[in-house]
Length: 263
Length: 256
Image 1 (spheres, each protein chain N blue to C red):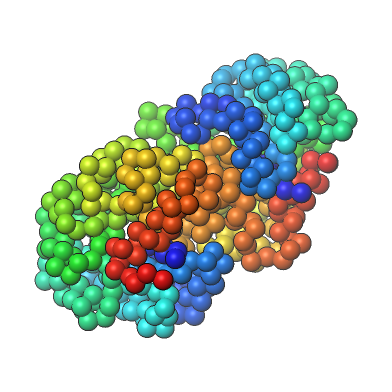
Image 2 (image 1 turned 90 degrees about the vertical axis):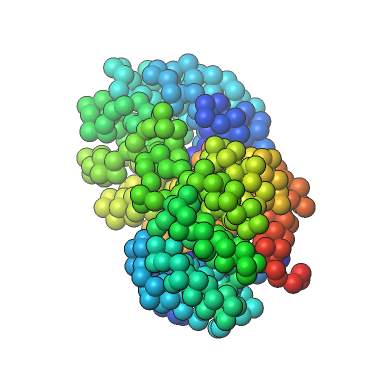
């Protein structure tokens, strides 16, 4: 089973080509061999209160069993933590035989919603997610900062903040989405539990290189494509062509994510 | 035939002669037939001396000699080192040692007429020029880094010289529009992340005959760059042109 932990649907304002509907995303992921994907709303990236975007996402993804809706939470908003923020996903069928009472994970974009991971609201959210055993997906960046629109520059999430968050919450499962290699190595080295995905990782056989650096990293690498902003096949090929064992390949392609999500 | 027009060896973690085998194994994994190497062009900073340039090119020559069936040399030249040095280097590399093109980086901007003797030499020898370029929201990598608009200026001054503008990922749509009127400008696929839609736009605005496969290996990998080509909605003919036919034409390689 191949699981992509970083996808989205909706409109990306800077490029029509990077704006896909659920059937379009589902179809291209299928062509790339992806069986299941964690999918969020692109509109929610820009809205201060993503609640309506999350609700629309859950409605839109009904019938697309390949796509698991993942709500985006703006932890800066008062009351963003607690049961309220998770209510939109209750009672929804998300591709499993039985309805799940909760989403498979929760995503945050601290840079786009203008807050630090050191804040009290994030601490409360982290505690609640840890208690519910729900992974927290932290979107480090959406674009290469060098090619962002000059009029809309958004800095990446400081990797040190993720390290500190992980250390304060050892029971919280964290996935850093969109890390560069140096950031990924920092997170893998300095925390015992943060996972990273491959969408922004690049360089000659980057996946094989990381695994050769430390074999234990293999359990914390996940497939993430960052579709539709990126081509899905670039991410899949990084793992499928890496010089690693078949077992490690299968772990990174899906088994690590399956275990993390409790599927 | 698949030709990677843009690769660097030695570079980064791959500095020993035997590390070239890692490159070739990786290329083989993706059925890449030929690699165009231009050495470690930042080994001595952005403006190396003539002697340092020669050392960089000697590494490329060693790779060409060891793997003549796989490696194609592009001669790195620093225009700031002077016209005479540039011409000497081109003669040594291209005329005497079989390099098939010229690689230019960032020491001199494309609008600077210090490039003119080099482009004149390229025209005389009938070889293409691979020119670094970038639009960088964070600012240029060096004060003289060329943008696509600068490359367009150079292309206008030397319409008979094929110029391969590196880094589609950094050209943006603006850069594609700026070089589109200059039929002697092609673009390589390397640069930044595999952003959906850019490759299709390059083909739409320039035509598939003006897009070439290039990775910037080992900074980027074949997985990342070829994934773009495999997923983009292109025809098989367009893919063949981009993967190797265009480069073979530029480099005057015999058809397979």
